Image (cartoon, rainbow, N blue to C red; front, side):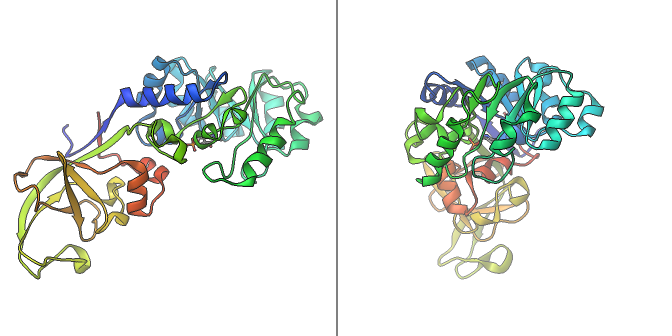
Length: 341
Ligand SMILES: *Cc1c(COP(=O)(O)O)cnc(C)c1O
């Protein structure tokens, strides 16, 4: 079936971003976070591309996400850990839980049959993870720990918390039987080699996101949403466009109505602030983004025809600024109506 929305995914840029982050990780291995269906791109496409580039360690949130890529021959860590319900459904042999709570540790000791696991330790974010004391304590002795992890709360900012969390984490070296240690997400990699330990876990920057200025020149855009023109029209001077009449024509204006809206993840925040591209010509969004439709200004592109494909301006840092959404939301919101290609 041919969809009127397509998502162009530049696989070469995706692989190049991984190689860039791998190089920045120094001697540490570089993995890839592919939770939320590869940040909206499609987890299988991402795993296939990055495994070919050399990535070996992949991170998902849930066991359903692990199962979706389990046949691809890569090592998978399940960040949310393990529940009795997951054990009952049977676990893929190449996936291991990242244990976050004393309850998960107890469950894995009973049911994991000595299989490897990872441990998440909380060093100050107060999101998921064991206390430092629990991680080095009696209950974790005897577990086969592959990777000891922690997660940075403020890596995308210049915050004193970064060094504080790094030091708390570094102090755990040799305190557990873990084979490796892992701290840095995309932004953490940009903080420097001190943060890389043995394994890094980038997500956002693989997909073209720029969480810190240090990455701006080296990370390539990967995702380009496109929509087809359904209708062209002329808006007469003083008339308005769209719900709530949020844009008014000062002069007669050529516009196009595109087959894309907030149900596709083209959020309402792009109202009167987003833009599309026709070659080098910028086509500003006019008025409110609807659920399935968006109007753009054709003043500088009067040769656009009904049925033509128009690309969204989707460089993530600037699109986030234009829409008020985070770069993460701009990726993970990309809907199911896009044909991913
Ligand atoms: C999502 C996630 C990552 C990847 O973070 P980015 O900011 O997308 O690079 C790494 N580690 C953990 C624990 C995560 O939840």
